[in-house]
Image 1 (cartoon, rainbow, N blue to C red):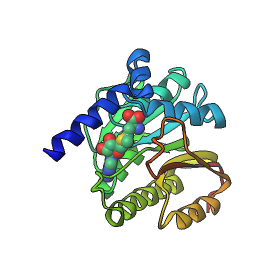
Image 2 (image 1 turned 120 degrees about the horizontal axis):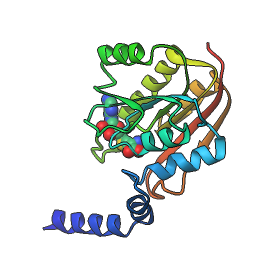
Image 3 (image 1 turned 90 degrees about the vertical axis):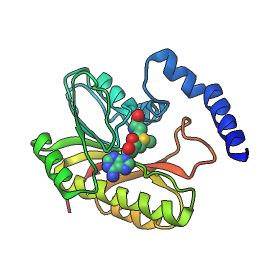
Image 4 (image 1 turned 60 degrees about the horizontal axis):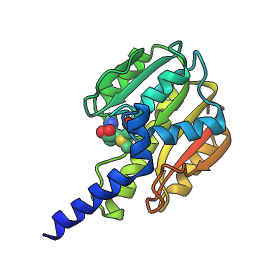
Length: 206
Ligand SMILES: C[S@@+](CC[C@H](N)C(=O)[O-])C[C@H]1O[C@@H](n2cnc3c(N)ncnc32)[C@H](O)[C@@H]1O
């Protein structure tokens, strides 16, 4: 009884959400698109020709934004553990990014240095901070590890993180690699969630 009541409330809140309604009107697959749009408006990461890796891409809201803003001239490789409908002009790999073989496949498909890595990966949430926080931190570490392998010097990184234990170490990983590190809480990121995005600009390979 309690469960169905809270599901009904979630559904009502979701339907009334400003960004859900905008996404429907404007043809985006998820409200998450507005997070990347806001980040990109601020940091100017995407332009025609930008080569992008998009981690945790499904259902494809960020991939759509990346495809639009690179004007069909970028090379965008998106990856998710879940299946995803194709986005025109992009390549999709389905696989678990924690698996070595999937990382190898991604590097093979990317085929050279990229200008930007974006990661909106998030684990299935258990609701228990002690479980979710380290799982998220692990996905962030893997995204940073990918950067060391594929990002060109001077390139940029955007990663979803959770505020809380371990975020200091993550910021340190960013500071040791990027000229400038910024925290962003986009308007489309729900106020009560601990989600923030770290943006690293100007990659210095270590
Ligand atoms: C918040 S959603 C991404 C939303 C997406 N950026 C968009 O704009 O539509 C997080 C995604 O991370 C993916 N994910 C979580 N763990 C993953 C893993 N180990 N490997 C690949 N994808 C993963 C989930 O399947 C989910 O689709």
